[in-house]
Length: 236
Image (cartoon, rainbow, N blue to C red; front, side):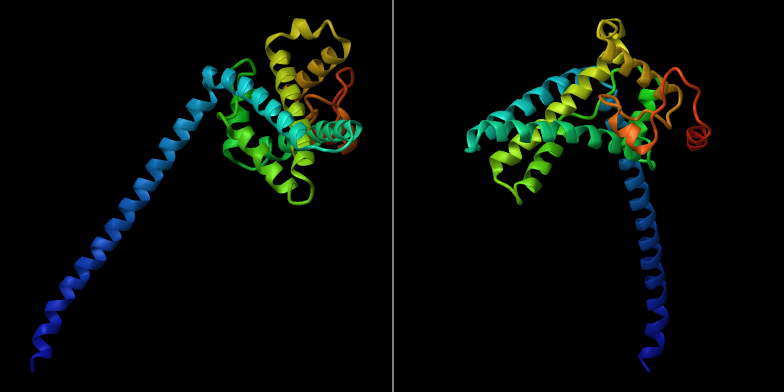
C-alpha cells in the first residue's frame, strides 16, 4: 500500500533531474564552443603578431645550432659521414616543405590552412607559426629517428632539416620584404618570381626554397609560360 503514493512523488524529481541534465549539457556545449573561439582568437593574435614573427626567426636559428652542437658532441664517426648526414637532412627538408605546403597549408580546413590563407590575403603581413612549434616538431622528429640510429646521427640529421627550414624561412621573408636584394642573385630572383606565380595560381609552385619537387610531382609552372589546363582545373 505504500508503493502507490510514493511512485507519483518520484516522477517530478526524475523530470527535474532530466531537465538539469539537459540544461547542464547545453551549458557545457556553449562553454566549450566559447572556449574554442577564445583559443582560436588567441592563436590568431599570436600568428599575426610581429613580435612572434621575429622571435620565431631567431629562436629557430638557435634551435638548429643546438642540434648541431649536440650532434657533434655525441657523434663519434668520420667527419665525412657527419657531413653527408647533414646534407641528407637539408635535402629532405625540400620534400617536407613541399608536402606541408601542398597538403597541409593548402589542404583540409585547419589552423595551419587558416593562417596560410591570411598570408595569401596579405603577403607582406608578418605571419608566422607560434613560438616553439617548429622547435617542438624538430624534437619530436629527433625522438623518433633516434629509435633507429644513434642519437648523435639523429641530431645531425635533424640539424640538416632545421637548417633547411631556416633557409626556407629566410628566402620566404626576403621574397616578400626584400625582393630587390634577391634580384642580385639570378637563382634567388627566379625563385621569387616562381613564388609570386604561386600567389596568383595557388595550385602550382609549392616549393619555395627549391623547384625540384614541383618538377617531380607535376606542379611546376614556369613564369614565362601560361598555366596548363590541368593546373588551372586543380585550382578551380
